[in-house]
Length: 398
Image 1: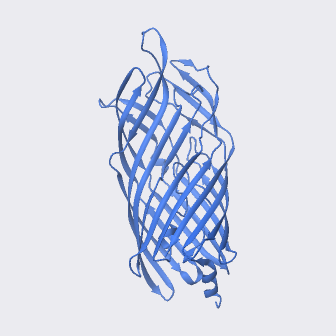
Image 2: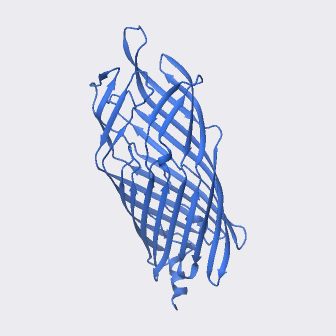
Image 3: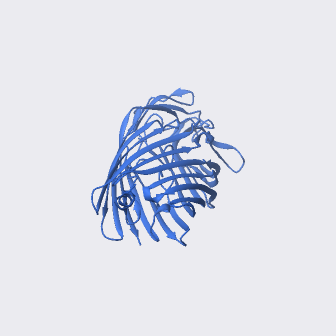
């Protein structure tokens, strides 16, 4: 017990517990991953951090069945690299308003899909490109109560605003000009939300600062988003398009504890209700369905454990392991291994650099649009692959 103050001094630099360097994502479309709310618990009066992640992805789709207008698609390659490299961001600021009340404001891109395939691949009548992204603005506050000497509970609440954009390209196949001639027409659907979807957040934490102990549980509600835009069949027609989607609710538990002088252990679990997202439907003004794609997702589960060590007054190192249960389609099980370091640049600034290698298991998917007028169907498979992430974070605290 006599080492409590030593533990606290060694585990804390600039008032912030060091953890969670692994930049691996959580499952499905989620880019935030586990432990994205750590800044809310920062001990500084004011803190700001900017985070970026770059991901090198190496997944190839291989057609197992492709059919259009009742005939197999045979022209073009059966296999194509499907996953361009991507990056995302997060900017967050935390303010201590009173000794009991802390608030955090954040903007980030919480959801992302990027698929970019060979324009001639055999699945081209179902998909050649997908680009979907979100932009979120959220605020969260935590009020701290002392329940007994050295033990604290926080009540957490907040609100989320979410904008979405969804774009997908493929080739349409039909007898347009002249009626007896079949031609491929590039087709693009592009819809976005003009007004944000609104969600809420609630949670609680239990803390014993002397031991660097904290356990937190945070729930984020589902968010309904309406999207509008248009569909263009190049050289043939264009029309308005509309879609509605419910982004899933989630529940995240995080636990950390000091285990020895200058060492911190972390553990986190995140559940995302992806099973509520079973299909993607887009309609035109007449109420006719233009896109009806079955997704059939399962619930997402992400589990992560980490260990951090303070080397000296300016250097900390850490490592994490993470398992994510795939939700189906292009999202198979993944296993991530991350390492990183945090460098104290001066009294107020800290630079964190982390990297992770992610092993992605093989899987299968279905790109068929059940509303396609050409009757195009596409099923595909993909093999095991290694994917790599680099994360940087710059933090200022006062």
